[in-house]
Length: 246
Length: 221
Ligand SMILES: Nc1ncnc2c1ncn2[C@@H]1O[C@H](COP(=O)(O)OP(=O)(O)OP(=O)(O)O)[C@@H](O)[C@H]1O
Ligand SMILES: [Mg+2]
Image (cartoon, rainbow over all chains, first blue to last red; front, side):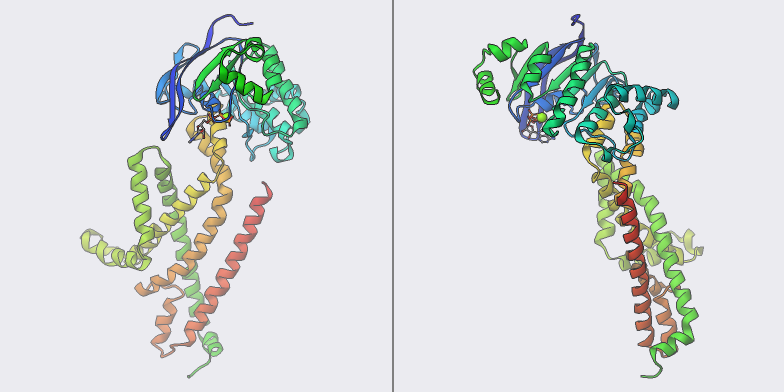
């Protein structure tokens, strides 16, 4: 599925929080159409890495290129680039003061100047794909965790992103709701969307990914196909991590 | 002891009423303009520009760290002295200015606190969608922060109702000023209890209203 056009390229990323050196020089290229899972022990820097990809965290060293353009934290075009980079959070972060419909349409209408009617028509189509069309006029407080996360996913899709970033999208969910959300992500991945997914769901990562990155202690300690990483890991720390979680 | 409290109240109630109206009005003006100014100060305080943020923080600390009465005296005596051109302006306005500035410091902290209380994830979600910083603030953060801010502004108004009693010192016609007027008629202790009673009733009623507002706002959570 991948055609080797780089979607996101990072070079020598370093990020610290105070004295804590979290990312210690990460270079990586995510190609168009690729589905990349990121696994690794807690505190290793997975979220920080992901959040650097759209500059939610600004690295103090290194560069992030999106579709060939250097992302500049002070640049006036950062918002425009972010519109093309969807992000889904562990805690959903749906907008509680807006209806399900408005959660989806607010950014396209404000920032892309999509006419309200058109945005709503598309929102309904998107809601249908995740089985939420009858919730359009509800407020998020009426939704379950799984429904909120599906809303968060279609809210991002309404911006027609070129890549989707997921940070542990099912970790805050009750077990019975995990499957629904994973299915949505799987459909999306199979439709050709470029996806970068931080996850603790090893089975899911193994099934869905073209490539798996193992991040530990601020570096990509090992990477490869799911078969390479899960069935035949080379690095000692990869083996140790997998023995704990599998 | 002379006349009783009720007797004094029945005889002079129009005076107390006029004082009360003055109190409510001065407090309203202080909080209204204090809110406008306070919103600006809060924006400076929250801005990424370190210098602007520091200026706002000093402003807040000075106004909250010195007594309102001192601020009133400075406004009353010092401003007309420092800027003689302003001499013709009624000194009432200087006292009001002190009330407004003082209130703006408290309001700016209320607004800042209300904004900071909104989950950072809301900002992250909005910005990751590509929403501009301005839209994120006006469409996502402020509508949520307002639920924390409005009741706190109500409480600030209640506090101001009591604070304006200091303005009587400068002969602004508010509730406490009636004490001075009646003291001239050798009524010393009765007005004090009447005034205290009126303040108490007013603040209790206002607190009850703020409570109602809080309930209404939290229903939509
Ligand atoms: N905003 C922040 N301020 C200070 N420290 C932070 C911040 N964000 C992350 N950290 C620290 O950086 C380290 C890496 O965090 P990160 O969230 O990237 O790890 P992770 O691999 O995603 O872990 P988990 O699997 O638990 O989500 C941790 O020690 C964390 O406490
Ligand atoms: Mg994480």
